[in-house]
Length: 623
Image 1: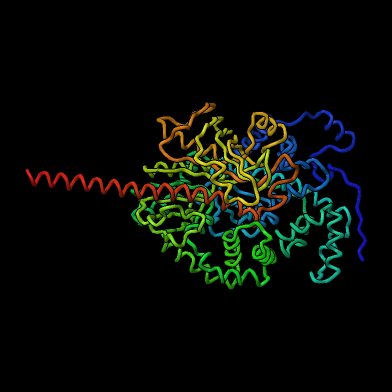
Image 2: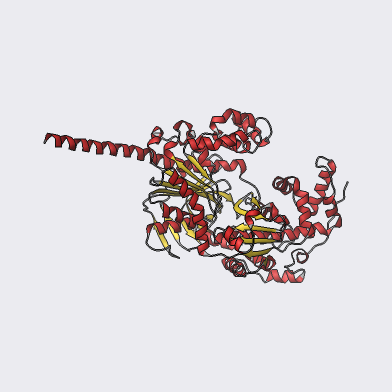
């Protein structure tokens, strides 16, 4: 049996940037509630620091981070670890960050190469909850590709938050000399001693059993190893911006679009009407291709083998009528998990071929932005393969469609403006723009769906009034676990950490209940497709009548008014598919309704034109 112990600690010793004792009390007494001013000051601070040609230690930003009182980091000043914030950062940074002391930011391979960093030769690494190109030199440096100013607004506060929590854990790990010794011991995971040591370490670090389980899910067998890395050194990340310019972002976006444009030309789709969708690259493909539905028996066998306890339990409940979930959603989730196994590799290899036979083409993000793209030729879809929930009346006429969907992984912040502008510049016939993404909700619950008809963009300070083509009725029939809230007001903010209670209260008092990052920048690009000038600033803009369909939908992934309730505190996981597919179905049905009706109208028009021509020819012959 290993005895647990704890030692006295002060915030000053752990964080190196907080006053202790009477100084701490005096500092707290003199503080006022943080609001938007503190957030703006934080942004200006790191933006000016990043103009330096050298490296900047993030210790210089710790106090500014404290000052904003971020709702995602409510216990930043506390001596106790803020596990919600810590896990949030861990999910959004590659695990290699634990071995690094320096982070480089750049817009392209050329920019890194100009400064002597051949990042293409480094190891490509990823973060589980944030799409971004990361490269690790195998030693102590990470390189991150940035697609817009929003990437710096995301990366910098995330790194600072990690550093704050890292140094709390560092002090706790070294407060008792035996803690590091326990982690260095080589004990088999199946041994009762391992469980006992884990309990002692967990209690010394003030981590709940639930939070420890979440760490084990994220880090797997490396929990002890990763904690050892944290315990061996205090952290002061060095950050360096390798040049960043407006032109550089434009160039990166154009490089991203180039292979998409080539594919559209090669498939002879460039003169077709386009529907632009910003969502993900799995849900539309699942709904349209039928690859999972055709393998129902194979996926059921996988689900019932017991390899995945969640799948086995959910299958049993569905079959017994004890779960309200959807069968197709279950198969899509099972297919995703199945493809990650050795047994599912055959399915994984054949899937792209089957999708291409049905007009679904996938372009991975090799150049420019870290955003995958799908190009979908609607005329090549097989009506019998479609998910039953999107088989609209007249779907058998889909082969007459001329429509093309350009579907992208939803981007981060201002990258949305660059992307949609590039798409609109290169496609004249745009019939619909549909934006689907995650958001924080100030009046709902995780898994709810929000439909806004007003969007305030913090970047441009424009307020857009929309005739959103979607309503609650379009989604509620396919939503099992959440609620649908339409006629909402959304605010597009600059970053997830860059929000505090007073800041959210200000918007909530003005009835803004949806907090997200992409809708505003997208609408700035929409403005430029309609008018002769660049998008304005600080204006009220009416988008009630547009020459194309416009829809904006979000599903809730965070509830910042409830402390710690964000995707760092949990995960939408299987149940998140409910909102994802309910909203994607609404978009798919909207497009198919347009195309089936459009195909029918085109056929009628062609018949009428033919009749007129024949009538004219007959009249000419008679004369």
